[in-house]
Length: 432
Image (cartoon, rainbow, N blue to C red):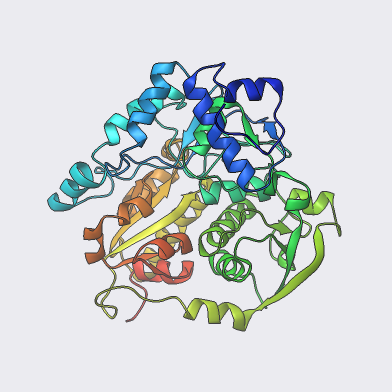
């Protein structure tokens, strides 16, 4: 055994590291052990929610080590016992139209290994062909951990939701670590897997005159606390108790913004999230810092977002709504709000190219209901694409994209707007 671990391993774990269960498992174990040692883990712990979630859903040719590694795992016969879900696919030519040149760049250059990679994923544990969503924890998708479960997940928005809203335990793992943990059935114990690591080092006081925009509130929190844990007070005045569907959507979006505008992996909301309710008054660590968020602070944060368009004064030509993917309730609400907005404007169709994104399972359920016909009449499009991966194509910078997602704003040239502003533009109600 070349690598001498700092943490204490069980007899079986040491045997895996020494190669007694094969070279491939030995390399995966060494990777996880080295990772844990780096962050001061004292042991490995079993995963109790067996279904993993992988962040790397895109077949980028530049990821040259990835595909031979996947082949080695396949040839060894190893796979994730509980299977796994994936982040969304990077393109959807049917519902998110691309120019001929954009399609060439996507299919031949940026994501030229997509077909090969998806075949590899299927062989090592991908649940099914529709298991591509950043919101795999939603009931329609079914990869839903319970409170206290240990996970092997990546994808910042999924991890922060699982930790915070569901009370599961997972660190913000990087790509491939999620797969290795799912195959081995264990992860190193440190950080957000420990009681001490889940204590809040920031007390956030929400002192606003109305319900804060989830994306801006999350952004403000993320930029202030970075990778620390916030305990949020005052928000319970504006949202209902879980599992209210509006609250689920709100916390999903707030968490995604905090995770992308900072590096938040866990938040607690007083009287709302499970650990805050179970440990009332005992989640603030000694020496915590305080951040008060009022109306003025939210507007300051909102005004700080840069406009990255080449022609910032021109009208937008595209809108992405749903990053992370929309919940079923959010999809219903946006459909009826767009319909109402168009009626008020005297229009039948949205004024620009509008794409709403949701998990494949959510989309399929939505299509069975009466709202789908209403949606189709608005002229908007429905997809399960990853907007972030779509905008990674440099050619998309020629589009003037608006979005209600702070995550998409952070990683692209898309311009963030509040829900009401996006709605006004796509329904032709805003005077520019």
